[in-house]
Image 1 (cartoon, helix red, strand yellow):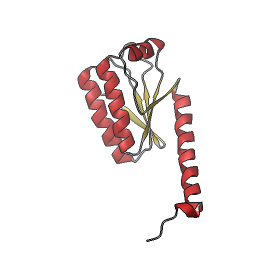
Image 2: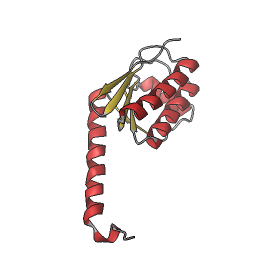
Image 3: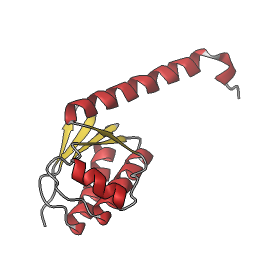
Length: 137
């Protein structure tokens, strides 16, 4: 069974799927990615599916599960490079991919994650400055 490589770029894990996603490969990716999020402490995951011509319902559900697991582990997931035929197939299959944001390419995905982290830090700073949100023991 082939494994999909998971690369660390700064605070982001980049997964570029360049092989046909068989069910076992998708499940292994799910496990590998969860492990890498914990080990690296990364807060962003980009999954590049630009090489995939077809995404079946199992792979679509696995992508949604990966996003859910990543979110629980404090990492946001962005799927990039989705071809129009893949998007149409996912919609026809009724897979809404909850928790997954999309971008046209890796560069835009990185920008999306960076903005998301900036917004999160800004919200944290506002909470600390707002006395109404401070609780006392």
